Length: 368
Ligand SMILES: Nc1nc2c(ncn2[C@@H]2O[C@H](COP(=O)(O)OP(=O)(O)OP(=O)(O)O)[C@@H](O)[C@H]2O)c(=O)[nH]1
Ligand SMILES: [Mg+2]
Picture 1 (spheres, rainbow, N blue to C red):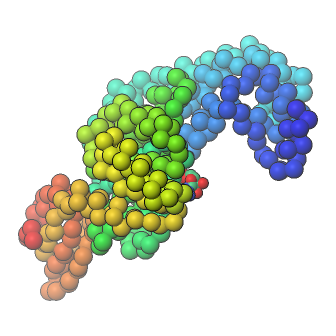
Picture 2 (picture 1 turned 90 degrees about the vertical axis):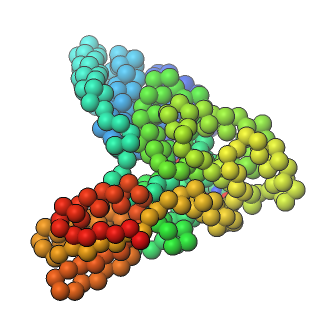
Picture 3 (picture 1 turned 135 degrees about the vertical axis):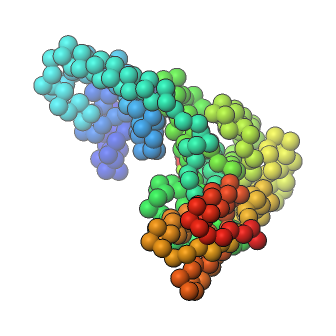
């Protein structure tokens, strides 16, 4: 305990995280000895999910998991807080044990009711997809595999051509350009083995929002020993299956090759080739072989169509045009005699949607 307190001081740590389960009294004693909050694996995962949940459903599920956790510890937490407040136990000392317990119980009940309502009118994933004309790619993979590094590597060169678009995207989705074709790329929360049972549902709805896409880059850390790689890979493929995304094409990005010798890379590729869909060795950090990854993606996402249309320039049509500029890859715009001529590129279903609009607005639509 003293050693830990020293370490906290030396490193100016703001929190202590334990890989194993922490009893309430242990968390209390640790906070008291070190002056900072102590949390366990379960609470850490909750914190990560809290940051990643963007739909109301996912947020509620996480709140529910939090409150259920609180319920299990409420009495002990209030009892301890009365002995003197410590980080993580602030403000609880004012409560009566039963009052606090009942308050949390009420909240759990209220969240459950809201969740039930949401589930009743839950929309299909397909309808939930971003209503934009770009194909989308999700990054998936075990935690620490290098998803965010790959996200950064793939997004860094893409100059935001269309600022307005970014306001419609969440912070973890960006527009990227692979050989002059544009796609939406989404970073996701990492897959985790030993996920606490009560979190599985919250985890899935957090993932479902993002993993529903036209292509998945499954990022795998191949610098690890082969048995560990295989174990994590199995967790990933199983999770993809369980959230109902197994119909989506996968490209496996075998990441961190900079840490291996050429022979080791070949050995691992050989060992994994049967188990990984479309494997491509890369290094996200050192930017190695990313072009090959992009080319593989293009081969799968080659379904964009080019189309053009002409519409009269009325006020109503201007707002349609500004919507289109935000939602698709507009390649050229020409104005003449109160008409606008637009050439754009988009996924086929989106081009169809544009055709309908154009025809309603008295325009003329042509596929190129
Ligand atoms: N050597 C090496 N390290 C890498 C490479 N790519 C990522 N890393 C490192 O691996 C660690 C994890 O990378 P992240 O990109 O944060 O991993 P992640 O998959 O987003 O992790 P979670 O978001 O926690 O699921 C970081 O320390 C990276 O610097 C690589 O190509 N080579
Ligand atoms: Mg990440």
